[in-house]
Image (cartoon, rainbow, N blue to C red; front, side, top):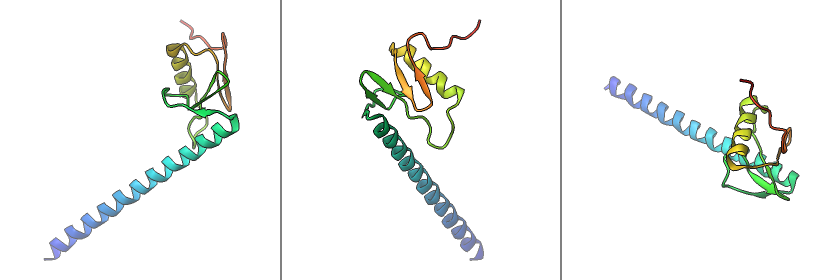
Length: 109
C-alpha cells in the first residue's frame, strides 16, 4: 500500500512538473510575441510570416526581431545573411543590424 502511495505521489509530482514547464513555455512564447510586436511597432512595420528570420516589412525592407532574451549573436546574423542570399533580399534591418547591397560579409576561403 505504501509503495502505491509513493508511486502515486511520484506521478503527481511529474504531472506538476510538466504543467509548470508548459506554463513556462507559454509565458516565453507570450514574451517573444510581445517583443516582436514592440519591434514591429517601433519600425512601423507590418507583420509577415513567409520568412524564417524576418518578422515584418516596411517600405520595401524586411525587419528581423531576433531572440527576446539573448543578445544578437554571430549565428543569428549568419542566419539572416543566408536567408537574404536564398531569398535574394537586398535590404533588411534589425535594431542592432543593417543589411544592404554589398554589405554582406563574405567568408574567407
